[in-house]
Image 1 (cartoon, rainbow, N blue to C red):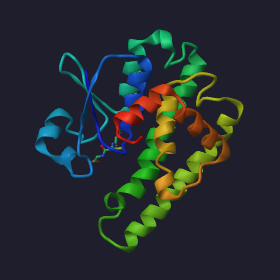
Image 2 (tube, rainbow, N blue to C red):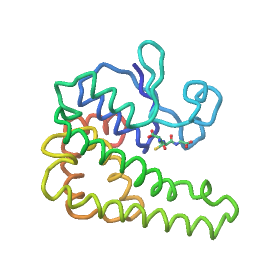
Image 3 (cartoon, protein in one colour):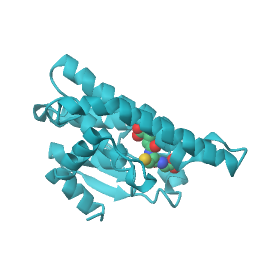
Image 4 (cartoon, rainbow, N blue to C red):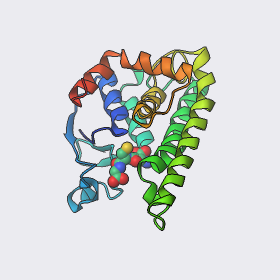
Length: 207
Ligand SMILES: N[C@@H](CCC(=O)N[C@@H](CS)C(=O)NCC(=O)O)C(=O)O
């Protein structure tokens, strides 16, 4: 299988899951900032024009962070990337969905691409949309923070798909001068110390 990824993108969460799962995979860097996801060649693979995109060994393509994460977790169920217990599984999916749908999809998306939300007013609109995105992100982190007070990981006492999702939004905060609440900062520091995450960051040329 091959993971299509882009520098700085949420695809790092999927790369981390592949590494944590110990699966065999290839990667291909896509020039997201340079617009490669909008080009015909990429859209022939994923018409949504997004990374992460996972091309499986049979040529079929998986898109959407949650779907790809779930599929990877199911390849190595013994590792517990999705908890066996139904309530813990629901908690992991709950955090992952909140990260993808709200903190990323509504919050950071407004910060990174305000023109998508306010195409009419190129200057003032962008500022307002970015502020709105920041509020959504900060509120989202404030909601998640108490959950990390009781546990080391996003959905309990072990690393799951939720941690991979939470990690990618935590790491977006520094360039935006958004302060992480205390328990999320500790979670982020714990994630940075994981060997799998260090290997991925090295592969991405970050360390
Ligand atoms: N809903 C998608 C969102 C993926 C997404 O927004 N990816 C961004 C990078 S973090 C992207 O590929 N952007 C390229 C573009 O919009 O052209 C998912 O969960 O995978």
